Amino acid sequence: MTVKNLACSLTVLLILFTNRSRASVSDDICHFFPNETTVRDPNSCSQYITCINSVSHYTACSSSTPYFDKDTGKCVKTLSDYSNCGVFCEDSVGQFIDDPTSCNGYYYCNDATTPIRGTCPDNTHFNSTLQACVYKTDSQCKLKELDVCAIAKNGVKVASDTDCRKYYECKKGVLSESQCGRGLYYNALSGTCLAKWRVNCAKHPLPDNVCGTTKNPYINQFVSDDATCRGYYYCNDKIVPDPAPKWGQCSNGTFFDAKTETCANPLTVACPSGADRCEGRSLTFVSGSEKGCRQYLRCQDGKTEAELSCGNRFFDENLVACISSPITYQSCAS
Image 1 (cartoon, helix red, strand yellow):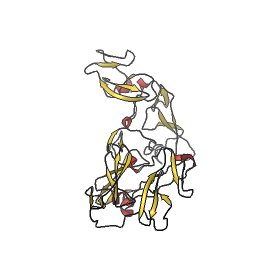
Image 2 (cartoon, rainbow, N blue to C red):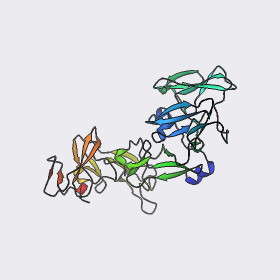
Image 3 (tube, rainbow, N blue to C red):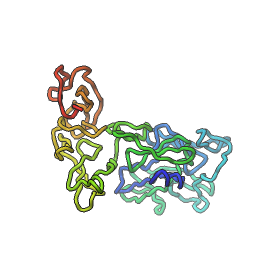
Image 4 (cartoon, rainbow, N blue to C red):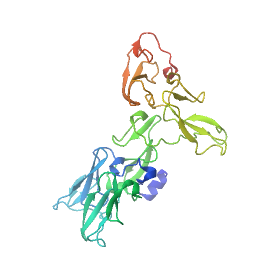
C-alpha cells in the first residue's frame, strides 16, 4: 500500500486479523496507538476511547454534551458531521451484534437507537451467528477497515501491522506513511522510533533487495536478515533474485556471520544496526556493539535489560570486567 493509495482512498489501513494464522496480532485497536491517545469510538459519536497500555477504555459523553469531538478531545453539544456515527440497531432489537473494532466485543440492541457495549471473557471472541462468546481457536474473526482520520485528530500516529519499521500519521485528514531510520523500529506504545532491541516485533520486515538485484543476484547464498544477530535468509536459484527467501537462525550462543555465511562466536560478529546482542545468550553480561568496546549489556531471558559503560576502560566479556587493556573484539571494533 503506497502513500498515494492511502491518500486517494482516505481509508485507514488498520486491517486486523485475529485467527490461528495471525494469533500474534492484538484484537484491540489501541494496540496500534500511542499510550494515552484518545479517539472517538468508531461505532458511536457519543463515546470515546482512551488507550492505556494498548487497552481500550470507553467513556460515554453526558446528555448535556452528547457528542465527542475528535479534534478538541472534548464532549460537545453538536458536531459538524454526523456521517461516521454509528452502530445501528434498527433491524436487531433484542439481539447481540458484532463490534467492528474488537473481536471479543459486542453490542446488545436494547432498542432501535440504544446499543449497549459488552465484552467477552479473555481468550474468547463474539460470534453473532451463535449469539455467544466462543473460544479464539473456534473464531474466524476479521475486523473491518477503519477510517482512522475520521476518529482521531491530526498528528495521531498509527502503527503498521505488517512492517515494524513503518507507521502512519493523520495529516489534514489524510493518512500518510512514514518509516523509521536504519536500525530503528516504530514503538506503538510510545509513538516513537527506537532501537530494534527495544521493540517487540512480531514479524521482522523482509530487507530491501534481500537477495540482490536482477543484475547482481545472490544465488545459493545465506544473507543476514538485517534485524537480528542470529537470523539469516537463504537465497535459492529457482527464481533470481529469490523474492521469498527462507528464514532461519543460528543456534543459541552463536551469531550469523554474513562474511563467512556461518554461525560463529558472537564476539567475532558485528550485528545489524539496532539488533539485540543478548539474543540467544545465556550470559548475564555481554559486550555491546558500540565502537571502542567500552559498552556492555545486562541481559535477562535473552533480551537486553540495560546498556552500561566502562567509561574509559574496556569491557572484557570473558573476565566479565572493565579492564585497562584495549579490547579488540571484531563485534565492536568498528
